[in-house]
Amino acid sequence: MTTAPDRPLLLLDVDGPLNPYGARLPQLRGYRAHRLHPSCWLARQTPGSRRHRRGLRVYLNPDHGPRLRSLPYELAWATTWMNEANEMIAPAVGLPPDLPFIAWPELFATDPDGLYWKTRPLLKWAAGRPFAWVDDMITDLDETYVRDNHDSPALMWRVHPRRGLREADFRKLTQWAAANT
Image 1 (tube, rainbow, N blue to C red):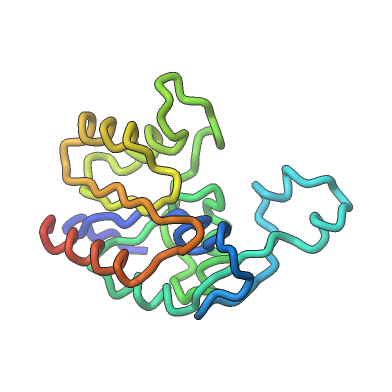
Image 2 (image 1 turned 135 degrees about the horizontal axis):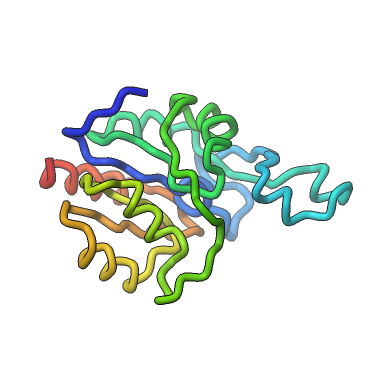
């Protein structure tokens, strides 16, 4: 994938923004259920168990890929799925199979200052570039840390894990990119 340094990064989490795992209703409008076997999830299952064999149920909306591609960003994965997002999520939502991804040094690491475990590695990976980060676990503490430790514009955008990305989220991402490019 070619990089476009003049465009801000859009760092995407899977679970929450693309897969509204907290949804109360099993049938979400526009979403399709998939049974996937991401290694991070499989590692926490009992080998041979029913859950291990069946896979993780993931709800994905095929309209999200074209909407995300139309945004004025360079897309990248910021998820525990890492490169498996390219293999399992991208085809289901219509994204290219070669998006860059953050290879986390340690999954679910405890931060000494109480930050979300993704925050420090994500900031290092962004390497000073402007970015919008879409995740369901961002806290006010993370926002403060990024504001104090990142010299370029950054949008920390929380998406509710019951709803996933919605029209208002796409509007906000578009507005922010227009104001910061």
